[in-house]
Image (tube, rainbow, N blue to C red; front, side, top):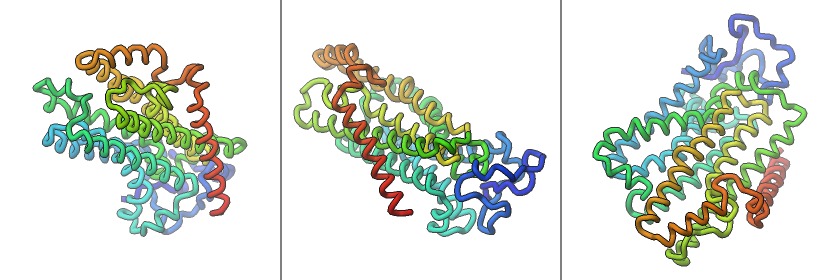
Length: 365
């Protein structure tokens, strides 16, 4: 079923005013008469409830299906970390399905035709989430392969004999809900660009600044994620018993990879805002991601696991970790973190990303 609404002649039961809205629509402007290849949403989807039913609900169904399959495989192999593999895979696959797949399958477009219907901001968004997702998936899979067993974070919860009977509803399905919310920028901008354009706050006067800001945040965040993983692996290879890593980007905050992820997810919404494609519902994405990283499956889960493991098996590391927590902020850098040379390198990476994107855009256009 075709699921993108070209507004036609009626909106919420009243005539839709076509004059004066062109500047609020994604560019190039959408014509008043639908193109023969442009899919049309069913009547009523211009309302919030209709939009949720036509875009968000199918997105949740996709994530829930992925979660069910992953749960089965994780239970069979007794490795809870399967849900960690799913996190970047599911979000990236959702973006590609909404941007390309649904139009190829449901509307008989070729992949190049589906790609060409995206505007520049949408193409940049799809490229950004793909780079983020593939890098994170590679990191998770390679770390899992080297370890050869389940992530130690899940050792404690698996001691409960009821764990696997409850895990789908306590772990896998809640993460599918979180993934659905985090995917809102992709779901709404790709499946309902007209409604997103109409609902997006007008930012014409600062659109260029917001575009550059989004590229800066993505580039700086990507650097933090990549550098954090590289430095941690190098630290382990140099001397596994060297103690808690506090150098490099790990001296900025205790979770530079999570900070980088938060910056990347925020950059997606800002990019859509700069292109007049940010539906207000999409703001839930970076908020949900931040809450998840800080208070649910990220920061909190990691630190509780490390503290428990160190206290039982490595008293020296337990003392070092306690001092680390006292000296370095968890997520947002303090003044000392901001003055770190690695913060300056991250800023430089953000600026470099801005200029690289500007140069590429100039050459292409």
